[in-house]
Amino acid sequence: MIHTPRPGAGTASALDTDAIRKDFPILQRVLHDGKPLVYLDSAATSQKPRQVLDAMNAYYEQHNANVHRGVHTLAEEATALYEGARDKVASFINAPSRDEVIFTKNASESLNLVANMLGWADEPYRVDADAEIVITEMEHHSNIVPWQLLSQRTGAKLKWFGLTDDGRLDLSNIDEIITEKTKVVSFVLVSNILGTVNPAEAIVRRAQDVGALVVVDASQAAPHMPLDVQALEADFVAFTGHKMLAPTGIGVLWGRQELLEDLPPFLGGGEMIETVSMSSSTYAPAPHKFEAGTPPISQAIGLGAAIDYLTAIGMENIAAHEKEIVEYAVRRLQEVPDLKIIGPVTAEDRGAAISFTLGDIHPHDVGQVLDEQGIAVRVGHHCARPVCLRYGIPATTRASFYLYSTEAEVDALIEGLHTVRAFFG
Amino acid sequence: MKMDSMYQEIILDHYKHPHGKGLRDGDAEVHHVNPTCGDEITLRVRLDGSTVADISYDSQGCSISQASASVLNDLLVGKQVGEAQQVQEAFLELMQSKGQSEGDEELLEDAIAFAGVSKYPARVKCALLSWMAWKDATAQALAEAPVKESA
Image (cartoon, rainbow over all chains, first blue to last red; front, side, top):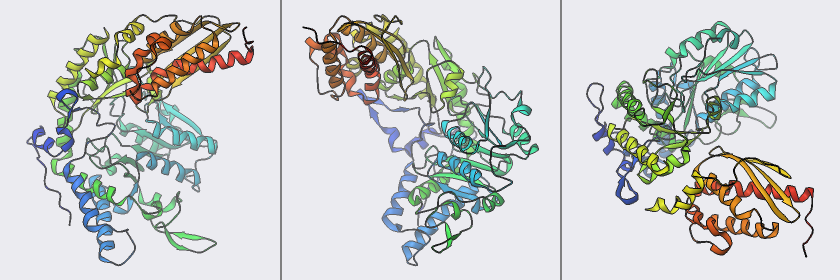
């Protein structure tokens, strides 16, 4: 059926980026006046290798049918491909069971799903007016707003960890933030704006001590480093496909099996039921209980192909490659006059996204002048406005890296930033 | 180069040396934000009869939004409200032209330098921020003290 050729895996820690880049047609693009594309916006969305595009095309050209119904050949092939993708995800995150992997449309939906399950749950999981919800000040809006909504609807109190001046979580008051009243703690594993890798173990241990559920937003972690949900000891882990070489429209929520059995469904519809009468229904077991309606089939298959691609290269190798790039980028960026990194200034416990300000030059202007040189970065508050407020800045410029990023691209960025300074200086 | 059509010398001049910046007395005050990029402006309008006596503002944002506020102050202060509204409408039309209009130089003066910005959808809102704030503030000021038709 669908084959994913083994991509160019490198030796030791370094990746063979030349070979890898050949798998990504878009990276061959040339922009304005013959400038090669320098894509430094993978934290917003990654580019897609030909293997992923081919897998999705092959599905539509040869196997397209709705899943879990129909007895014809195509329906069975489509179901096998879709469920095969679930197996790949389960193995990728070391889930104890494939039934713990719920497909959603993105990480936002995954997090909203958890918040809604807990809002409608019975005791002991129910979040009500006596409960407290804990998040952090460095969350993406997708891990803030669902909890604000839950708090407003239930009367539960929303609390959060603040940040230190060097872009890390301030856990000094962890025992006052996470208390016996805390029902759920939800935090980001790797910040999309600061690049910080958070100390999950300390937070998980305290949450477990008080019997709170732990939700981890792994959107910026799953694409870049080995992710083991059992080692993490969380109760729920959310991430999205499009940041890890897969298409948009496919996300994952992993949850512990007994929780998924106990918690109520959120969206109702086809696919998620066992029997339906006009007065009531019973529900399918997880994960189908949480997948109402026709799912994103080709997108899930694309995610499966992306996982094959990443696994063939090796997540350890990808992490090592990105660490080298980030070390180099952090050093080179600090050579640029008036440039200030917002977040950790070393590569220690740091992901592949680096935010910075450049004197008084607004990030919009930085991004625009870089674009003229073929360099794609993200500018703005990166859906993490509280972080900008915390550091008293309106916005940042963010460069982010992935398995196909090279030191030459970092050099192009540095040169571009000098041009920006000359232009507005 | 394409970029030079966005970052005209006039725009960079206004950005580096903004005219009329700072908050002064006014008849109405508004605060507008551009949620996609965090550009912000607090703008006050003071009317003297049917004349735009002052437009004062405090703002933060990119070169385009800053320069645009400065040009707004240059162009509209001293004009009759009706004339100023015509200029505002012409500027709005220019910014919505997707690069297809060069703008009426007699009416828009320095503001025609923004014609190139209209080709960049992400930046049109930056250029319009102060102008929409002025429109809003002026409507409020007029509601407070309606201008009599001048003879």
